Image (tube, rainbow, N blue to C red; front, side):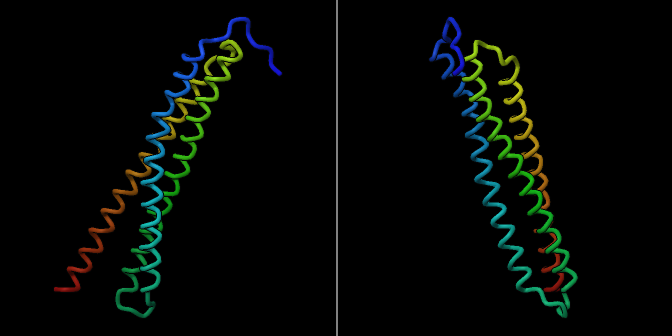
Length: 153
């Protein structure tokens, strides 16, 4: 068991500091929910495209291109999810590092700050990946709409 420092920190201050990452945790959880829903939609769309895909169909090349684009979207969402889980772990680690730092008399130095910064960087990278995926989704929709309009002309 670790020896306790001579003067224990104010528990309210420690708890308040530990709860600060909760705001980031809440934001990350919201993004995780959204990203998981997007991944489910992409997977469903891919399954429907694959199910309707006929190698001898006149639009087989177009369907193959759609499948490839949706596959790219799925990989972008997966990357975002991994980054969001890393952010979540970093923010939980920040709370734990703050508590541990208080217990050992502020001997952990910059560790709580480093874990918080890592979490924010993971969150930023995940947001960029989701931005790319949303942009690709709109491009896919535009291309599919153009193809359908060309068929009807």
